Amino acid sequence: MGWQFKSAGSFADERAARDFAERNYLESGDVRTRNVGGRIELEIRQSALDGRHLQDCGEGRRNGWN
Image (cartoon, rainbow, N blue to C red; front, side, top):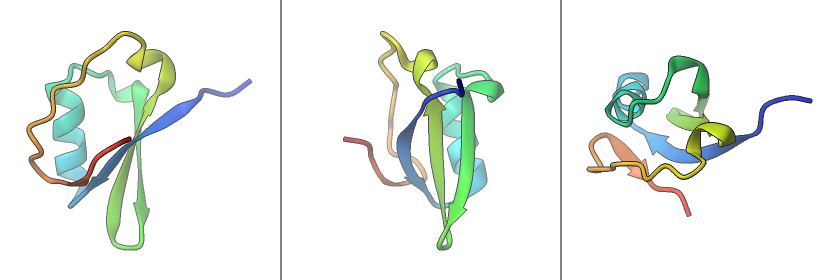
C-alpha cells in the first residue's frame, strides 16, 4: 500500500512550495512537488495532515486547496 497524498495547491516555483512546507513544520518526506504545465503543485502526505491546521499567508501560492 502506498502513501496517500493531498493537493496543497499551486505555487509559482519550487522554493515557494518548500517554504510553505517549512513554515508549517512539515518533514521533507511528507511533501512532494510536481511541475505541471509551468507551475509547481505541492502535495502533502495525508497522515501528516491529520488534525493539523496549516498556516497560509498566501506567499507564492497561485491557488489553494478545497
